Image (cartoon, rainbow, N blue to C red; front, side):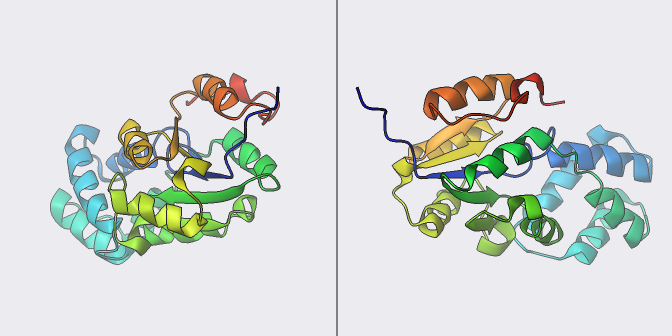
Length: 215
């Protein structure tokens, strides 16, 4: 009996996949400490601003200005930017996995993200073999909107049923699957490993992968 045909491409979200936990949750925690406020107060303000930041409505200076106005705080721009960028907590096993896939699959990334982080991700040498990077601020639409996934399909130039899409957000997986992509939800690494092996039989994971969890 022949082996089932494997998908041709694998595409990934960035935050919550290549980071431990979501980037936004870490940024809210770190920025709350910076200005001395509660995370419950800051979170809705931050998420509202990020929804605009992620579609290119303003740059980092504009983000800082609006943040200060909304929170009635005044952190210096350099400290604010350093704190924001410092919220990245890398999930190393996912970088290791991506590094093993380039010779077998087309690779892509579709992420709701802001310019300064997009540049950082795109220039990361560990992701140098990726064929396509699509960031919300550059395509002017955020997941889970259908247009974001259509842009990914067009960038990879493949039928959707030949593309695996990995994301930590269930709503994004549902949206991707509704368009025919093979959605793969990342909750914890052990659970993800089991789903991966079911969807991609014979495509091994890095040694010790399942021993690492989200936190």
